[in-house]
Each structure stands twice: as structure tokens, then as C-alpha cells.
Length: 185
Image (cartoon, rainbow, N blue to C red):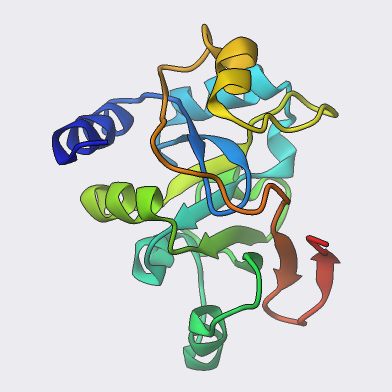
């Protein structure tokens, strides 16, 4: 994608667009985490219960700051390289919207170096909501063509020109206790 197209994509997300896009792991559906109408659309598309919460993907930890409550040691843990993509369950801040946490006291965040996410998050100065591109209890789509076939009329944009990561979901790990809740292998 050209810089102009990426800027246009970031503006569309700011205006409420729901996108289908490749992440550092799998293909996902994403939007502005503060746009409740966009969140509601994603939940409806996926047939997902809001009490489950949603993941925030970001190019920088500081973009997640309004959503989480961490100390210096936890910050270091979050910034330490991981062997594979890791989604961290982190204490949610008082400002974290209920739709990000669901029924939990934690927010799920993943800091990643995927080139698309780096450009978008850096332009927005914010994370993106991300959830796998699939309906509840169905397999995740594996490419832009499948995404278009399954969700074409329900998303505002399908991002191409970038590859998804391993095709496997991230590991999910509790920051407070170090417990692994989902292994990606």
C-alpha cells in the first residue's frame, strides 16, 4: 500500500471503519477501540458475546497506556522480546472501556512489529481492536480472498499487500502471574 492509501486507511478507522487485515499472527477484524458503534459491528459480524472482551494490538506500549495499569517491572516484561507473538492479560485501568475488558479486570494487549500495524497505530497514536477474522466457533480465514468471501459485505475495507504471521493464534499469558492461558503451538 502506498503512504497515501495507508493514511486514508487510518482516517477511515478514525471515522469508524471496520477493517479486515493481516496481523502478526492471523487475519483479523479491527477498528478504533473507542468507537462503540464499530465495536458493536465487529461483535455482530463474529456473533461474539461482549463479555469476552477484545484484544488491543499496538506498535507501541504507550498507545495502550490509557487502557492498562502497570508498574515499572511489568513495563519491562511487556517490552521484553518473546519467542512468538504473545497477548498479555494486564490489569485494566479505570479508564478502560467495558467492551475492551468484557467481564474481566484485565485488558488483553499485544505489542507487535507487523509493518501494517506499525504504520496504522503510529498514525492513529492509538492501538487497534483486533479479533480473529472468523465467526464464533469457526476457523479463521487464511487470506484476503477468504476474508472477502466470508465478510466482504460486512467490513468497510480489506487490507492487502501485507502478509499475516504464522497463521496460528498468539500465546495468551497473564502478566501478574505468568500463567499461560493459551499456547500458540
